[in-house]
Image 1 (tube, rainbow, N blue to C red):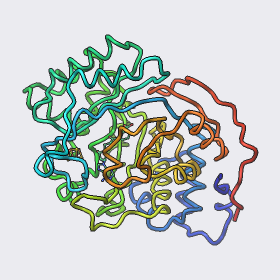
Image 2: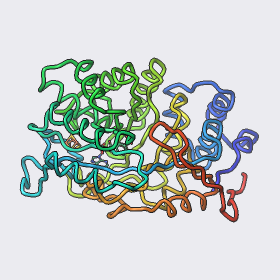
Image 3: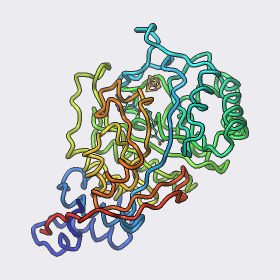
Image 4: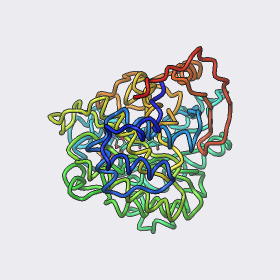
Length: 389
Ligand code: V47
Ligand code: SF4
């Protein structure tokens, strides 16, 4: 499915003057303001937002949708923090359901992918009081010694902030040490919603927005690429989402170190925010679209398919998304435990390629830094284009 053409909207007299002005800015290559971003959320219907986001997407990434072959390691779900949206952390409650992997167990997981054409391992988990900087530096060295070409994307800024404080080291020193040990890039987790009005209510005890941003800025300075996430669809307002993206856009202007923005849909199963209803699929799509339009300096927007499910992942490609993450196994328990769409997320490369091609896009396998690993020719019989207005 492809959205309608934005020029049809621009010549349509039925559309509000303010939305038309924003569309003209975007098609003219001009950056939109924070108030424009809020207005898009408030007034933009899905068809209009999809058409405008698709214009940006195709300018940046053409018809390509990327994926990669990766696997996940979650060293522990024991966590010293108590984010209200988290269904995963087990420190105070249900400690018996917690897991803590030893170095050997982690290396067993790495070895279990020997001979498989994976290019990346994503290491992320809870913040365990005893898994410290030295423990993780040792693991990074072992993984690199075992499989030097495997890209290690690991540790959210929240995990790193805690590790560095415990080790009484600066961000520069701590990150420098992990980078030297084998850490190649940082995932985007822990960002949640930066604005203190919301952050104080959903994750009061972990690192602040400024601390999160400082860690990513330092990583960029060290030459590492990173991602950024936003946990949306709970108690935040549209203005908080735009504030979040604006802080990221400002840092990206300085460093150009972010690769990908990943909106993460809040799931409400078994957590302290279970009374908060989840966003609709339409809202998910509108959110992808506004992210693509607002973050004009982010190369990629990723839909994390295990969270939103395969169908929404397909449609998201018409709303600004150009990356569907990886062909991964069922090891990402942070989502399945929160009620994600895919309870056993596993897609073969062939399945992911067809999922992309059925959407009328060209599937490209990438490595973590978006170098092309494999280009799959489009074999989809037809592209279904939504009728122009
Ligand atoms: O920061 C926790 C989220 C994140 C819930 O960089 C929840 O490629 C929804 O960092 N509902 C960690 N989300 C995951 C992460 C990530 C994921 C995919 C790709 C990348 C990347 C990074 O998981 C946390 C938090 O925002 N999360 N609980 C929940 N109930
Ligand atoms: Fe810990 Fe992360 Fe869960 Fe927060 S979201 S409680 S930091 S595991």
